[in-house]
Length: 105
Image (tube, rainbow, N blue to C red; front, side, top):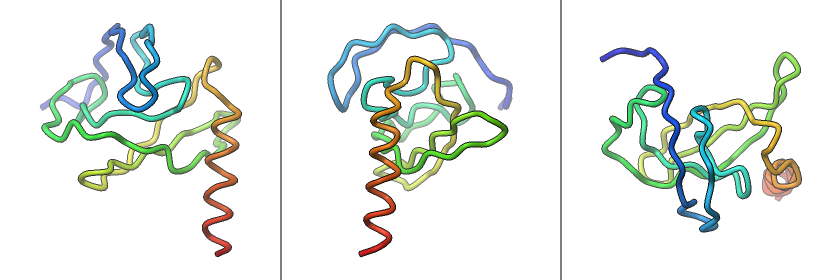
């Protein structure tokens, strides 16, 4: 199986917030709620059998880019992806605040 990125322009309805999303070929998560779905083994291949929701669990900054980490609610797999300009950065801040609050409990 190839690890090469496969660009797929696909529109979808977010399985978490139900918002209708217009795909760009690089879209791997909902820009509104930032949730994703475990559909790929390698980017764009749609080869995963899991198909569970992936929760946004962390946001970091690397080389000036915002990186979103998702964790699959079924199998636990973690994947990272660059955030896009159209992503909801208020939601990204909430993810960070919630994680910090949880860690302090």
